[in-house]
Image (cartoon, rainbow, N blue to C red; front, side, top):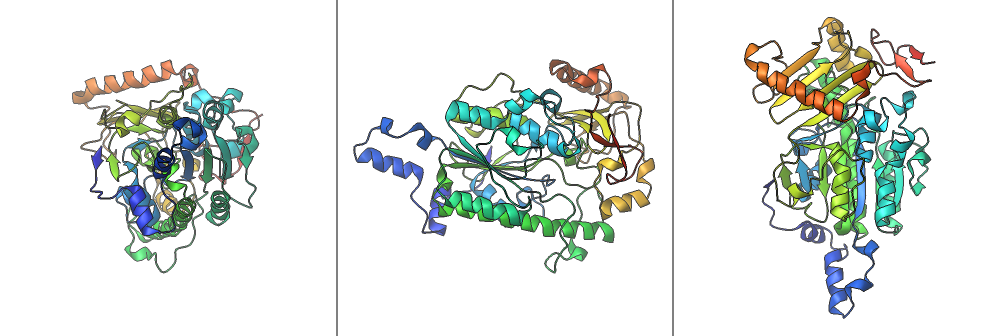
Length: 481
């Protein structure tokens, strides 16, 4: 990892910035030992770091630590005090499957979450039993609380949290006060706290004067026109509110003296809800914001360029807490990277889509240089219901997006074509690379027993599915019998 200049530790900076903060956990432990107490007199629970899992919706990497001109100063500060993962990827660029894979450490086709929970999909019974909070409770004594969005179970109590906070909604103004209150009420430690925000899902908040649509640039590869700039200005207004919520929760951590012994995990599910991003296997869909700050090396404003999958978070927690990783985990701990022992844990990461609003089966494998995407089935046109409605989408649709061909398979050179637009599948000079990437994908699908190997993947009874020939996810749906 590359390390930014950081003359002071996180503890020193926060103590200097807010004089009312309590002494760090390390200092407190040292004082206890100096007074004659023994190490055994301090409980294991006291030594375990708390874990704050704070996640957003549809944010991708559109935050300022990744170089984007968006109003996220609190997330920026978190990155400057922790570790910024520049090459983090989800296991599925669609909402429920992405979250389910992060929290179980399994691919969606293994934990059963093949589509959206709000459209009738669910994990298998074993998938729900594999939620990380169950392992942390059993193996390390963690007490778990859910505040806000979870998006992987119709009934949040299915997940196994010790406490589910009842709040009127999942927007920032509902979730943030409850999270701040929780932290100020001296929660039992060690705790796992999920703070889930609906932002930055569409429909966006309306831009104010501080977000001037005339001077805002839409993300690549969206064209720079008034309709898309208006759309991006509304995104700015929405992420501004998200960042405020994150900042309030971080302030509460510091004000209560919990910050030094809390591992903060800040991430999102997948790319932003613009064309070719969310629900797509390009980097704009797979790439996610991931910042971690806390004990055991997650400090100092480090920047990590190693490829990390959401699947790697669960085994990393086990490694950090020195507990045995469950046998079902499909990722790898990246603690060796954080500690400085190695540069990479993955030579490739994989991702999948099955159902979103419509059925769109596809798989991808990505190495440092190459991306290979394979579409399954006989459809070779965009599945427009799988893109959320908005003015950027409308602009594309009005200019013929529905008839733009989708290649059955694609190979991209991410060095010379980082925007993934020059498909090299038919280029004879890349035949060896193509075969290697095809083999990588086939190997992953076989070793994980991907049901797509055996034909189309069925939706469960009661699932609500859009016809792929429709335009909007709000068009009439078919209910699976």
